[in-house]
Image 1 (cartoon, rainbow, N blue to C red):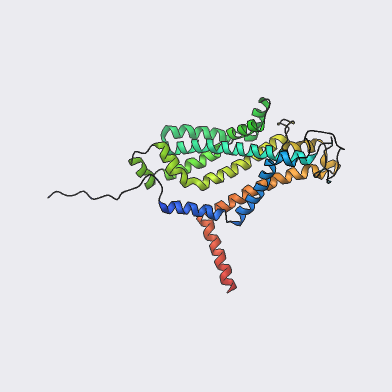
Image 2: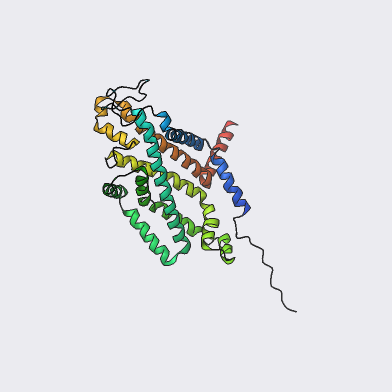
Length: 315
């Protein structure tokens, strides 16, 4: 009597389990109902709307110096004028468009490069992992601001697109290390092994099986990438390495510093762009904190314990 081979349970390698899908959907639902995430989204949406409506909201040409210099805020000039008679509100509104565009391009490009480099290195391993990891380490040890200054000084006729691309091409290394380590931890999971045994291609495994399980990390990396790109652009402009013909919050701060706004008491010149940079940074931080609190079990459990203590103390 011949022994029968045991029947193996069927495995569906084409997608993560329904339980994982529901968990990810639940995480995003919690994110959009989290108080900190809502606050961050409201702040960011305000400045995005301001940037989109810049041609409508800006009453004057931001470069036109046709007004009385150093006028305080009034109904005619909501944020006053510069020392050369330019309307600061028009510069501020157009600056929102430039700064947020650079932030999105730089953060998005750094995310794409870091994701591709990190996932491919972590999934393939071997000499490919060693080579790509060495390239990432080189970019990690390079001083980013100094590298940006050198590249910016050699590039002529910069625009928000060019500046964003420069920032994205130099700021991807840290994200690549994070994605590499996460991919390495997922590459030997059962659903990935089952996908390999079914003959699924490497690209489908990486982007169809591994990437959906890193959605929260991708979102967090995009937030921090956009924040880093905005701060890098503001720093470059404040140091004078951005074309003065463009309007950005960093350029406004540079002109205010060069025009002696603090010495003359023209607070309306440097406070709005500085406050806007701080608020946008706060919005990204709030959203990232909310995402971390939702996806990190330790933070979620500590929050539940605090609520239970408060409830027990009340009773």
